[in-house]
Image (cartoon, rainbow, N blue to C red):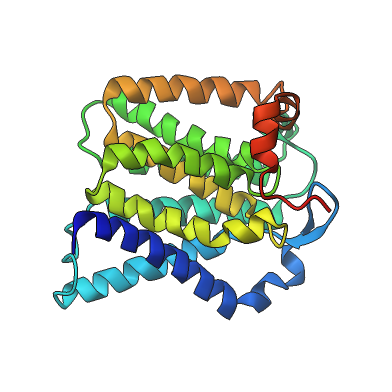
Length: 284
């Protein structure tokens, strides 16, 4: 099999795994515990990103098993794939907890810190602290060099995950932005280990994209958290220190700006962004 075919196959397998799981588990989405109102007060199932996490888990389990029988890569050959899987599981779990157990109106870093000062630990704060912990584990696995690099790479991954959450305010928005961000990463990673590992997860998100866009479900933090995290991890694994520092600065600016400015309002005031944001969405 050619190298390009491996990437395409990873995309297709990721997509099909999620579509199969959603078909087989459609009753899960009907569970009352998942029902939430979206930005237009439509009642929809949230936390649908769990199907992405499960889809990637199924694909990686199958790949490892087949590899053990000399079909495809042997187990342990592609070091990026277990890192991607751990990012999906770790950030997906934290997002799922926030989706299901969150209460109150505490939003953003400031809101969670205010709640902590009042003696309350929010699920959002748990997600932030837990996400930082997962990010440190991920950043420490790739050719550890120094404490400063570990810190900067971990912060990059954690802020990328949080940015995913901040963008998930309209149908399909975070996946659209994620796909745009994936393009330069995919070009840089090419058909190597990271390119194939990332393609599985991107394919899985494509599997829920149509339903998210047409307001049949919501990714929730379970999905948005994961999408941001895996793209941040890919930047850490693929790019030079200079590029990573540039991405880190951009993420810091965007995360801080979100505390004072609504991304949705900015998008609505910029015609090209508004057209892109509305593309494919239901207008009913």
